[in-house]
Image 1 (spheres, rainbow, N blue to C red):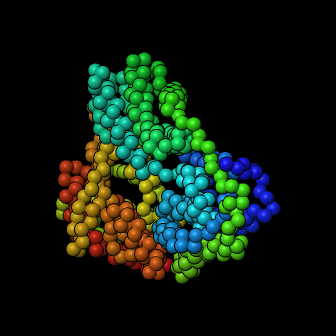
Image 2 (image 1 turned 90 degrees about the horizontal axis):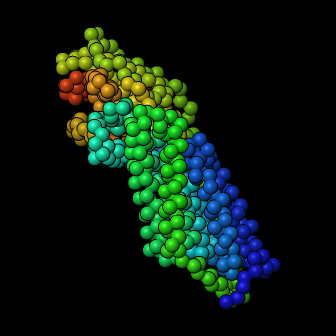
Image 3 (image 1 turned 45 degrees about the vertical axis):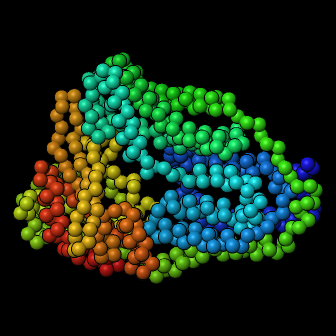
Length: 517
């Protein structure tokens, strides 16, 4: 095996290749700057994804470690990879049309990753395969798992409390023990521990093991350990507070104990994992001149880079044409009428409740009394959607996680036939928090559905698809979210009766708002 110098010889094909590839990365970064800046903003403001700040420097360091092997290879463009890049560009366009932030960011990173084999070739991409895959940790992704992880944590804590003889009453993610009340909120879910552990665990596995099965096994452990550790952390915090009369593990102590416990668990995981570490394989590099002698002409690299830049620019051109066609739209004017068929605002009475968000272009609300009871209607209209203004968003909560009075213990699907179409709506229950005395407020039932381009939709995904199709068809970048709520034992029947009879009137009202632009 011959040694490869750390510096490139004058005749190395890497000099012209890098002179083309580095500007290409800058051009792609400029095209996708909105996605890149949105990622960086989340890294900076979110504790859950603060670890993502380390991804770019780690990727550069990992590539630098393989510089000797890379210097011995010749860049060999693979033009056929433009086809999957076109697919990624189409994905970015569809995601951008309906402001799906995670999808646009994954598409941005995938474009950068695919540019490596497309311009520099498969041998280069294979040599730095892990750093390329590690780049995807830069995308702040995973908050969709919050509800599940919160529920699992609550399940474990309540079960462990019962096994250790502590009486507990649970409602959703809230539970009461003799010493006080507790809630499993987003910070208790363990999502930040999981994300950080998986990233660092993957890096540890790559640097410590050679066999793929060991790497995969340790990466799986780095997922399971923080989940179980968070369950134990939450249980111990509740027990410490309970046994100390709420003198320990509350306030700042609560957070401090959590991070200390997590740090100890991760260090133990790495210590155990290091016992099975494998020595690094000695990198084989071609004999001097073996790979470089057959390097393709530099113009092939230039042409490949230009083609990649054209593919990256294409969806932005399509989006610009759509935005010019949509033009600037006036702020929507939205009002609910005093009567809808047999339903009237006169004499209506429903619980006083407002969701924990107000981000729409226009909002209207009213309470209607009808033959079967009273129902509250809240309509949020969104025009000119972007990263912060959009019809479908996973960040909207019916009740704030730290609300002292209300909680949402249950979400479920509700099927309804409207005009021959089957809608699967989201049904939620809003309850008053249970106190040590056992008292609580009355129950509120909330149904949610969407209106986009003249039709109602129940699910988030179908609403997103409908929004993208509407924009591609030139029907505007807007839509509405409807929340229908009622209280009492017959709440579901009242909401269904109202929706079956008045959905057409609501659709006509929203269509008028849509057409007034």
